[in-house]
Length: 303
Figure 1 (cartoon, rainbow, N blue to C red):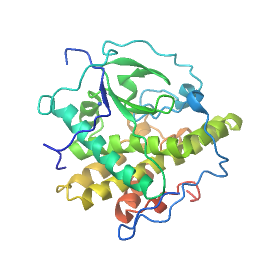
Figure 2 (cartoon, rainbow, N blue to C red; figure 1 turned 60 degrees about the horizontal axis):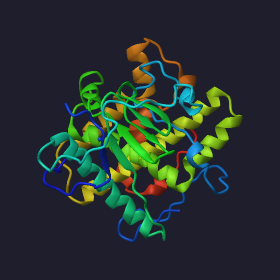
Figure 3 (cartoon, rainbow, N blue to C red; figure 1 turned 60 degrees about the vertical axis):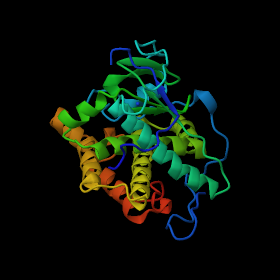
Figure 4 (cartoon, helix red, strand yellow; figure 1 turned 135 degrees about the horizontal axis):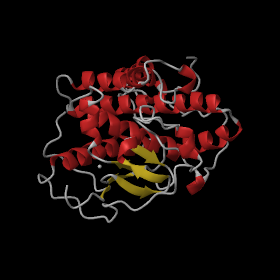
């Protein structure tokens, strides 16, 4: 991905330890005519009480995402990097620069899409931390991977996750890293338009297995939104050879079935919360190949 020397987002909060991340688009782009389906959503959100933590590697760690919804993992503690500091100047911290450039690209895309639908996109803040930090959704822990918290509209990421993605999950490459960021920003879009509040409300009357199945649809839509972002980056002539293959490989490596097979030696579909490798690849590719958010309706499709 062509990212060096490009504009960085200002919506990055650096809390790392000192030792050391109804839509419509105008004609000609193919992104027109989209309403995000929510299965009968009736309007307002649930505010700061809404909690959905998106775990990239939670299954591998034996963490049930549903426990994060009810706050049973705790309310969070102050980590060593909990005090914010200015982001290093451009060129001083390559990985922080990379994250900030990718976030800026997502902001450019979604600002345009929201504007063309008479809406205003409110960017998420991406929080870089070390080991642990506080969020409105509870403890931000490096071991759970990057996640989006709708309670404070922040994406939390310990940049050491990218080494885990490369060495433990077999998903190297800068575009694999970018895919993870775009996926989490996709959850922010879902929060802004009411999909996550509806999810939080709906699961109150669901069994754990039903809630897991709903979570899969949420996650796959975020994968599709990441594909839309990849399509946008391609339109801007920022892709390099092998970029899309890196993202598709990452989607394969972090599918629920792949993680369970790798860590448990068996696959239990009813516990899936993010989707299979095939599903994650398919929905990313759907967004990328079409460039059309109308192709990201994971709620109406039969799996």
